[in-house]
Image 1 (cartoon, one colour):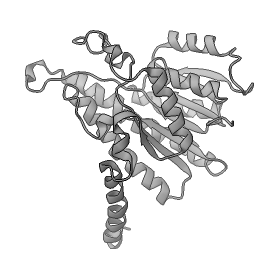
Image 2 (spheres, one colour):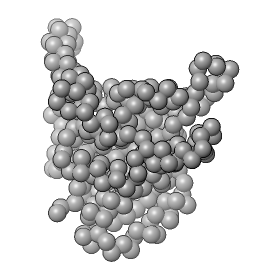
Image 3 (cartoon, helix red, strand yellow):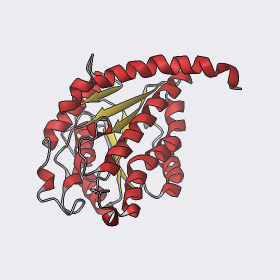
Length: 281
């Protein structure tokens, strides 16, 4: 079976979903470039996998680049560097994210700086990254299919985890922006494929004590990571623009509320374009 992508850049791959997905892709013959803030983890990953014999494609390679996505001013030079070094980069997976508890019923306890950093990490940095990397994907897209894959969250659709209002809101904002981005690229005639994945809770360090100090054994919450990665990989193989894993799958299925909302978007944006046509230059 052919590799899923030729070469993929994974934003946020030093642990959890990003790291496990990188390995799954590499084992499937896709060359990977892993990024993250922790250089020691990147070095360890490359050391472990650079001599891997499990990939069916001997040409599959693994590289790493350290990046703190909250340093927005560094993103343009990062994008220029990685695309110059890897002109065959055909896919980007945006996975980095943080989740913090906030109780706004007790406003004195709310750390607004931490709240702002969560929005920066989960949403604003993604916008900057895509803006910087899109020119490369658009240009390469004239020769071959290119991809932008966003690891979102089912909480973007229904924010049932009330203890994490910032995380929920950042993912909801990301979902709305992705929907518009996908349509803009279509309207422009670009072949960049925009895919959004809605995971359930997954057993990663997102919920551990280091990130959420009021939790005990938070890393045990949710779907086992290997099962999730297998399901996500199969979903990516199917080629849908968006898909959910776990309980949210029915929301995107025919008749589900998110499927219906997408229909409303498709109809509504056409109507709005028509209404605005005479006002726009």
